Length: 258
Image 1: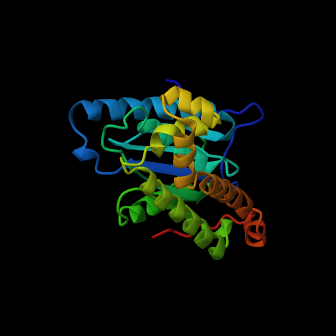
Image 2: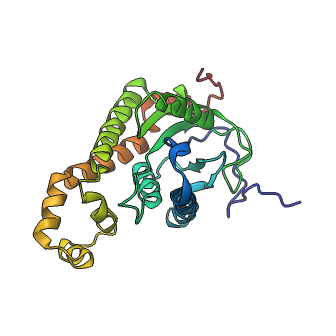
């Protein structure tokens, strides 16, 4: 029998004191996705998670994989570009599907410890990180459509920072909802912007004019949103270095999220 406990190049990683980001995602109204689109979405989800596992290897502790139906999860290091990874998943699932109904995704993010051995894939582990991610996902079901909720083990973050992170993630979720309207062609150029292609090249690829691309970029507030994405990732990274987090690193007490 193969043991899938992950052994790093330095040592076996047991998360009894370190903090990590558990990410649980769920497709919104997945039961309404039927027929050929259902097959395509499932295939794109698998391909996207494989791509994320490769592109962000240095930040991934346990690989993303599909768990229950259209639910998936992964485990990240706290310095991971969280929203960039979330965006990669959303945009990958919807790649080349601009004429179809946009598939929205809910995310629950948990910051905390893992109390069991780390596995190569994000299954068979337990600890506050996943407990709080599940709690966050449950909360996201009370929101309409796409939502991202962040919850942290109390010893890892101060309450004000958690509120700030959720406020910023909420703003990004609103911008995403604006982008997904089919009348807005911004979704069509977004993958190329993620690849840092210039507007002239994007126009050539999409057989349109550069001024049109420029107008779409401006109307979507792309520069401002990109800056906000970076701010969210930077803030999450610094949360573990707050006085409260430093003062509790040696403690092993665990408060239930319920």
